[in-house]
Length: 131
Image 1 (cartoon, rainbow, N blue to C red):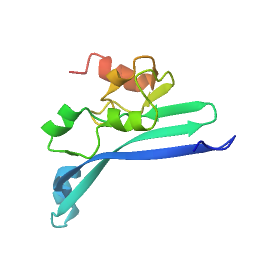
Image 2 (cartoon, rainbow, N blue to C red):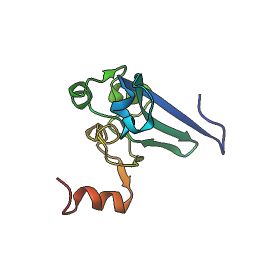
Image 3 (cartoon, rainbow, N blue to C red):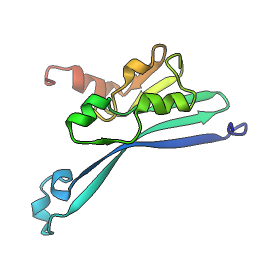
Image 4 (tube, rainbow, N blue to C red):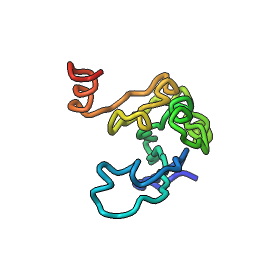
């Protein structure tokens, strides 16, 4: 079912998770004065669809990157995208909010897309200070 004219559908696709601890997720957690405890971090990518087409945002991490970090992959993002009708021929925009591994994987799934990233973010990751 497509959105009505003038409306948008926003899909948050949970593709994986990480079972870890609070001290692993939060910087300087010991300074909070609270005991450490189990925590779960969920991983999502986003699709926004409207009458003029779709936009994909932060297309997830690749299976290899996620597995190396101990993440559980619930759905491979390229397969999930395909199930939403977004195949390799997708020519819409792919927005990268920032270049962490869980936001910038699977770019090779998009053979014809235009990639959009803030200029300052691009400069940070491609500048002299990056490794």
